[in-house]
Structure formats: structure tokens, C-alpha cells
Amino acid sequence: MPFLSRAQQRWAHTSKGTKALGGPAAVHEWDQATDFSHLPEHVMKTERVNLGKKGSFDVKKGALHEMLHIPDDQTIPESRIKSAEHSSKPLLRRRARSAEGLEHMRRGR
Image 1 (spheres, rainbow, N blue to C red):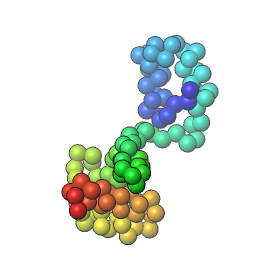
Image 2: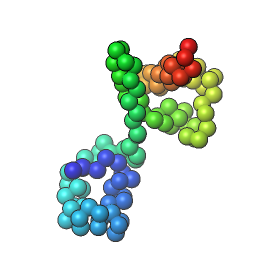
Image 3: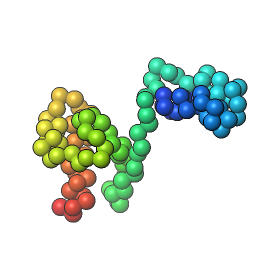
Image 4: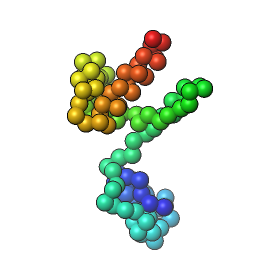
């Protein structure tokens, strides 16, 4: 089984992590199965949004906060979301529009 993030890999090399995985041989096996060139620092948590008959989709919790460099415990100002909708980065534009749409769903507009 490959590691999903660099943080998980660091944990596995601690004494507690090595014991939890089953010993040094198991940790070495995980190291061999991991592609370290595409390993993120942390794994994003996803949440499934159900739209009923229209389908459903996954939302990565905290991704827009991370892209805008805003701490997770603070709310994103509406002006920052509006400016992100006109960004040159397509992923940032999509996440900003999704955030606005989810806010409308939450408020019932």
C-alpha cells in the first residue's frame, strides 16, 4: 500500500508508526510502493455533496482557503471570492465559483 502524503510517510518512520504498520519490513514495503515524485504534503479531506436527482459531487474541504492563503479558522471575505472568480488559474476559478454556489445552496437562494 503506498503512502498518501508526506506527513503519513514521516509518521510511519516514527517508532509508534512502525509498530502500528507491523515493523520495519512493512514500512520498507510501503516505501517501495510509493511514488514520491507526486506525493502531496497533506491529503485533502473530501465531502460528498448530494444534489438529489441532479447527482452528486465531491468537495475538497479547505482547498480554497489554502489557495488564497487564508487560515482555516477564518472565513473567506466575499470580495476575495469575487476576485478569485476572475483569476488566471482555472482551478482557483472553479473552486471560487463552487464556493459561491455552495453558499447559495446553504442560504437557500
